Length: 122
Length: 122
DNA sequence: ATTTGATGTTTACACGCGTAATTGATGGCG
DNA sequence: CGCCATCAATTACGCGTGTAAACATCAAAT
Figure 1 (tube, helix red, strand yellow):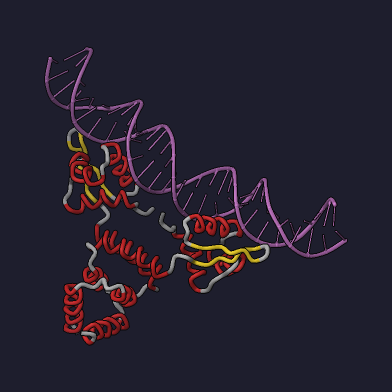
Figure 2 (cartoon, rainbow over the protein chains, first blue to last red; figure 1 turned 180 degrees about the vertical axis):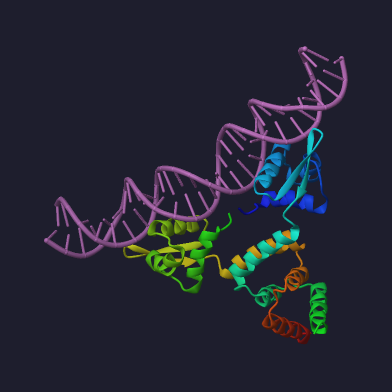
């Protein structure tokens, strides 16, 4: 089963640093999301059920560690979008952003560099 | 309110050609999705409520036309992903696909062309 | 040993979604 | 004019989600 958006917020915290306790997650994410303790706990439990995180007992609390990597998640999400909207091809996606004037100078520079590297490595 | 995935399938039909009747939509999308008549009608109604399509009476049936354009939809969806996963920047996204070896020859060629054009236009 | 505070687990509930059956409207036919 | 076929609209239902209250557990303090 897929990871929901709220669940992904929790994963994000764990991707930045792990393992973490539920409370640490709450203090990091609570203010921005204005979530309560129970909410975070529920999300953690659903992530456990989905095998996206692992929990290890540490005294009276648990330490949570991500099992699903950020790379895997990003991969799934972006492939999904690419397939649904751009026929699975990257260039049309970039073209879209280009038309939308969403390419910054920095983006363009980096893209150039990237293409150069692809060139160099034969 | 956002358009769901099933609703987007219906929109896709209308983006390819509009206006269309519910039945036309069904025959175009029913086989692939194995949806029934009622399903398509429901989706159309939800899209109406969301003001994503417009319905115009034509005798005893309706002709449905998209109000939300494909461009707008693609824009929303891809901006969402970009912001959530790549800090709103395009280059990291492309880099991601590059690392994942998801850039085809064709992609690379097109990206080169695109960058060239950006160059030319000043 | 009992209470209390900290944690985690279970249960709850409203809402959107996917899917469809049921009901309602309406125009054509006998 | 009344009935049937054709559409659309309403209602339904199970499931995941966002959010949280209620409940359980257990170590620590008294």
